Image 1 (cartoon, rainbow, N blue to C red):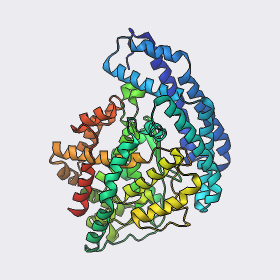
Image 2 (tube, one colour):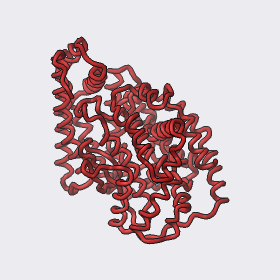
Image 3 (cartoon, rainbow, N blue to C red):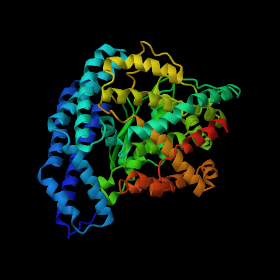
Image 4 (cartoon, rainbow, N blue to C red):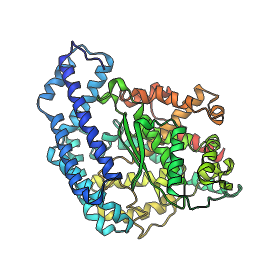
Length: 501
C-alpha cells in the first residue's frame, strides 16, 4: 500500500489500523489455540488475556483524538480506494465508540468461560450446568445491542446483526425466510419421496481411522487450492476458520463411524480459508482488505461445500481419494457417492444437515436468538421453543436431548448472537454466484467434470475475494452478478434442479 503524502490525517489513520491489525492477529491466533490446542486448565488465564487484549484494541479505536483524524481525512485528496477504506474505518469507529470498555472486556471474559464449559457440558447433556453461563452472555449481548441501538438508531437485533452482515435488517430476513418457510417443508417431503423411489444408497462401512480422515481432508484441500504455506487444519469441538490471510487457522472434527462429516466440514472451511488467503494484499492491515460480511464469507464456504463439493462431477474427483485413504468400497463408486452426498434426510445436527433441510435449522435459530435479544423470551425458554420449532420445521423430537438440540452449537455461548442468518444468506449468495458463472461460462459444468476447477476459483477471486470490503454489499453483488441485490430465486432454482430436476 502506497501512502498518500498529501493526506497526513489519513496516513496516521492507516498506521493506527495497521497496528490494530497486528494486535488482532495475535488475538486471533490465541483464540484459535484456545479452541484447538490449549490444555483445559489454561482457560481462565487465556480468557483474562483475551479480555485484556480486547480492552486494549478498544482503547486504540476509541481514543478521543481519532474523531478529529477521521474528520480531517474526509477533507483530504483521497482516491476511491482510500475513501472506501476511510468509510470502513468510520464504520468500525462508530460501532466501537457505542460500547463502554467495561462491556467489551466483560463480554469477552464471559464468552470465553461459557464456551470452554460448553465443551464438556454439551457432552454430558447438562443444560442446567450450561444455563448460568449462557444467561450472563445473553445479558451482556442485550446490553451490547442496546448500546449499538442507541448509537445507530437501529433496532437492537438489527444492531447486533449489522456487526456480521452490514446493511441487513430483520425485516428483510423475515421476508426471505418467510418465503423459505412457504415452500421448503413441501420440497423436503417431495425430495424424500423422489429419493425413496431411486436406487438405495450404499452406506459406508467404518470405522474410519482419524489419521486416514485427516490425510483425506488434506488431499481435498489441495484439490481445492488451499495454500498450506499460509494456513493449516487442526481439530476442535466445533469446526471454524480463523487467523489472518497469511496464517489461516481452520479446524474440523472427526467421527470414527463416518468420514462424511469431517470431509464436508473440511471442504466448507476450505472455502472460508481460500477467501481469507486471497483477500487484497495491497491493502493488508486496513479495514478495506477484510471480508465484506459473514454472509459473503458463508457464500464462499457453501460455494465450496454445496455448489461445488456436492456437484455430481465433483464426486468423480473425490472417489479416487476415498479409495486411496480407506480402500475400495462400493460406497465410493462416483454415482453412489453423489447420491450419498445429496441424500435428504432431516436430522438433529445443523452442521451435518443436508443442503435442502439446512435452512430450517437456521430459521429456527434466527427466530430464537432474535426473541432472546428483544427480551420476549429468556434463556430458560430456549429448550421448549427449540422442541416446538424442530417438530414444526423438520418433524423431529428433541425433548430432553439438549446435546443434539439447543446445546449443539458454539455460537450463543461464545457470544456470536446475530450471526445465524448469515448461513442461509450465504447459501442464497452462493447460488447466485454459480447462476452467474453458468450464464457467463456455459461450459462450466462440463469443465468441472473434466476436473477443471480453476475457472470457478478465478471467478470467485475476481468478483469476491480480491474485492475485500472495497464495495458496500449491494454494489459488490451488482458487480459480481449483474443483479441489484440478493436474489433468493437462484437458491430455490438450484435446489429444484439438483434434487427434483
